[in-house]
Amino acid sequence: MTLKKIIFATNNAHKLDEVRHFLNQQYEILSLKEMGFDQDIDEPYFTLHENASVKSQTIYNHFGLDCFADDTGLEVEALNGEPGVFSARYAGPGCTFRDNVVKLLNEMKGKANRNARFRTVISLIVNGQEYHFEGQVDGHIAHETAGNEGFGYDPVFIPNGYSKSFAQMPLDEKNQISHRARAVAKLVEFLKQTK
Ligand code: IMP
Image (cartoon, rainbow, N blue to C red):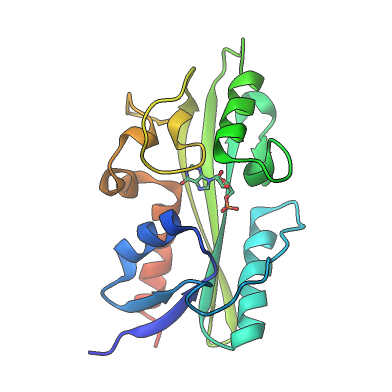
């Protein structure tokens, strides 16, 4: 059986691994690099929905092929939902994952309420129509980093019901409960019913 092709508008190897894990029976998932697309796509909006849309629409307009994009934010209650849509560049332009984690731990010093959630929005364009899927996972921000798996804020995010961070979990375990996994599960259900 030949697999259908779909573009995932990302070059983040971690995200590709996570999503391929769910879809590799039905779809060949192509990254932007594999499509030879090397332009930066601006994410100028203040919502995850709009930023996911601008990425999928840019790729759809360029290639005319089915594609999807995701946008994720870490929303921390005691910081009024920050870093939220600015999660990637929280510590400033050109910052690393580590810079962001250091800034977050500094901002959280002395805060008793450490509740947080990851939220992912996926924008899918299939047969020229756009659809959105959302997933979230609730948890809290640890006092210090732990673990080497994953990426981004994983070393300081402890999901509810666990006593270890996302970065202390093998990918399979994170994939059972993560924000992106939950959004992708909805995407997969939808794609299964789409020709
Ligand atoms: P993006 O715009 O969807 O790439 O996500 C924005 C930022 O959120 C990323 O640069 C990461 O810092 C963070 N992020 C996204 N997904 C995850 C995750 O699964 N774990 C930890 N951090 C994440």
